[in-house]
Length: 151
Image (cartoon, rainbow, N blue to C red; front, side):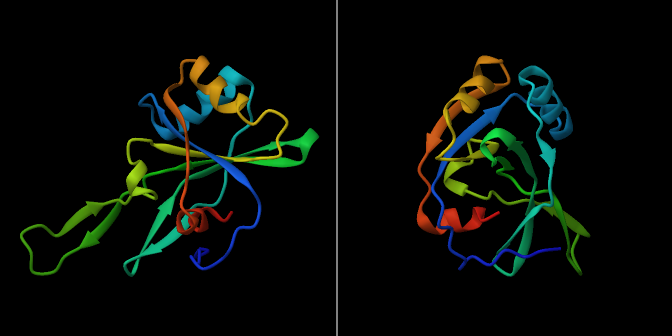
């Protein structure tokens, strides 16, 4: 498991979009995106972020745009459920998850695009026009938030 250190610096320029997709299981959503738009998103190693002495894992999907030699990233905004065991408690464990970006918790995915793509706005618009995304909105991440997405 790789652990992301939040003091790494990202030097490239990116555009970020918050996307709220229709409710599907994760695997089905990616399949529908790939089928409907002829995309090729593939699952990558989870993004692991340490927060308050805990490590939260977020799903990451990438798509290579070969003719431009760039990648597009689709990152789930909510971590995988994590069981926390509690001793001497009425309940032996609780399920917990965490948002990667709490202030954007109305979006279930973050789309990260290289600003040098020929038509970077075309990808998020196509997700909405295909009827898969309910909301697509360009978002401004703070510098400390961008550090979480060094991939």
